[in-house]
Length: 510
Image (cartoon, rainbow, N blue to C red; front, side, top):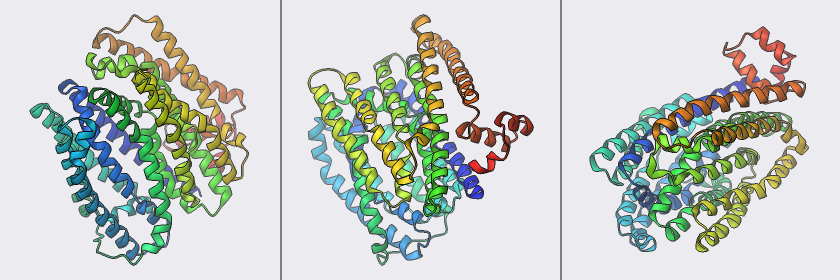
């Protein structure tokens, strides 16, 4: 278990490194392009991407997850997965070509049509990508997964920025996406020796699991991109551009840390799904560590949103400040649902993922549409997402507790200290911001951030440490984080063991 835990922890580190790099490069690209383009440019691409993402989500059958979960998958299963994907992506590309004129009519902007054609080409290229790269995750060789993602993102950002300076139009964003697809296709064959061939003989072994994954993906699309259709239709390209940029920035500290960890955790969960006690320990450890890192990052974004937007995006993007704050709160609430996706997939209960997401959609989209139609403004309408996430949170925790056969208090035991420390940190940041002079320039914004970021980090660390000591230094995410620091020679082992109070617990937590 400890060896597996070390591999999963190492994988999580690689995936966090990849996602951090991807989001950092994406942020750099956004910051530069925000000075060259206007919100309308981002909104136009988001309109076309909403249609493209629908095709991609419907066709994301979860074949990679099925291959990872099936420890006895054979070559014919990999060939079958590749063949199914190739056929679907080709059909999806054709569907995009046919739908492009209608998308332009729906959004009332003729420019959308040509952008959709470009995304059709991207869809077609994705169909030929080498299925062999799934082995990077299945075999826990996350270093190769990192290099694959690194190559795609670095090339895309380079082209996007270069074209941004040259064209100064939304086509810079489109050309960056095309570059990413082409480089991903090339790297998939350069980095793995597997050569797929046409075969459908293994479809029966994959389709049962994948059918529910498809349902989940459609629900996830409605949750993630459904608002784009509503905002694009009722507010327009400017409003949608502001919403998408705000969403991308708000996700940086929460889901963009959470997602790579869960990507690494799933193979580990799948390997111990038959052993409920081990799965339960692994789940609680993963949830505790995720909460420890991502909740303070998400709530910290709320406190620094104003100076951050001034510094990174400029005065033309101030409309995104309240959107970023609300969406950052949304990210924190979703983390507290528990990492249900990886758990339910490992337990072969993928349908519960889609059920919860669908419930979220049914609460969010009608409320958002009504608020916008009634003229309440986009910054009010996005609260509908927080409302839905908060309303469903206790039900998710209850279901996780049921499947793991544990009391709900075990879940809350690993998250309450990081959550409380994060709330104290947020209150400190908001109080400090209120006491500071208003931000009127990028220089003042930089000074505010130089004060607020260290203040928030220090406040969180001190409060968290105080709560841990006051609780009797229990086993949990704090102890595991301490062990990870010891293993990397960051702290003196003797001093760390003295803090933890029991060296033998380290192995048990693993």
